[in-house]
Image 1 (cartoon, one colour):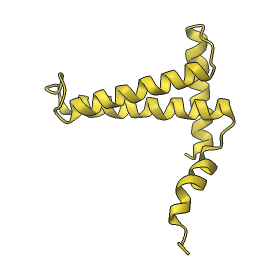
Image 2: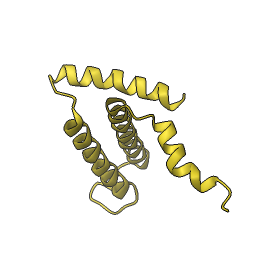
Image 3: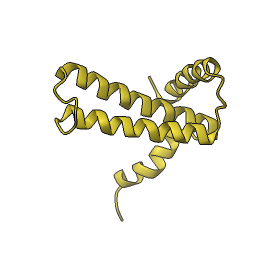
Image 4: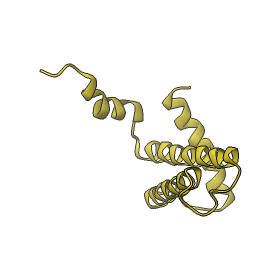
Length: 104
């Protein structure tokens, strides 16, 4: 699935989320959720690698939690990009792709 399709799917899921909790989807909400989810990735990572309380949980559960939190980061990034009219594929290629071009 390409990024544009993921972006549409993320927005559809986020529509359900904001409607369910009567939230306003604006830049402050989306950037706040993105930062929150990045923190949750860090917590899950630390547990997964034995560096936080809860690391004694089943390794498969820890791995699944880490993957879930990474998916949340991606989801909120996709929704933020959609809200701000950012073509993530083009932005990524412009920023990161330049390092793959031959250096003169």
